[in-house]
Length: 129
Image (cartoon, rainbow, N blue to C red; front, side, top):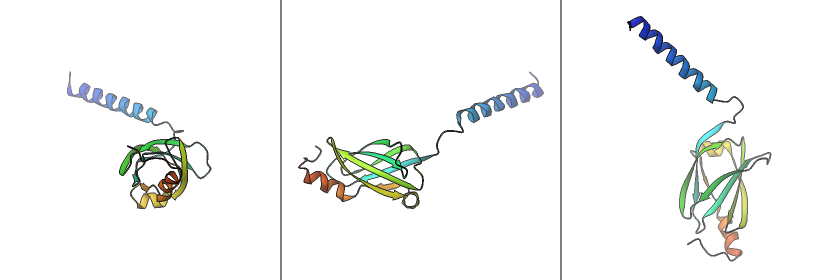
């Protein structure tokens, strides 16, 4: 192969890769944040969900481990107001809201409020082993 044909092949390959990348980025897909750290200072492992201010389409994040910070990756952006809900051991434990601006300023870190664990204690639920 000549240098000219190698250059053409390289340009064609780069163009093909660019087409694949553009195709994979679907214009209708919602924007996402790279990660969200959920701080759980309680003695309960808590299931966390989040939804936007409109209340539609709650997104299940997962389990925030007791007395730990749990990272969740690639979270759909919930807009200007993020509404979180928590549950443990089959019991709904409460909700709280945080603005997107607060989350950005905190480095995409949210703390589960102490009222969540207080409510679970009032229900008589034992700490997560």
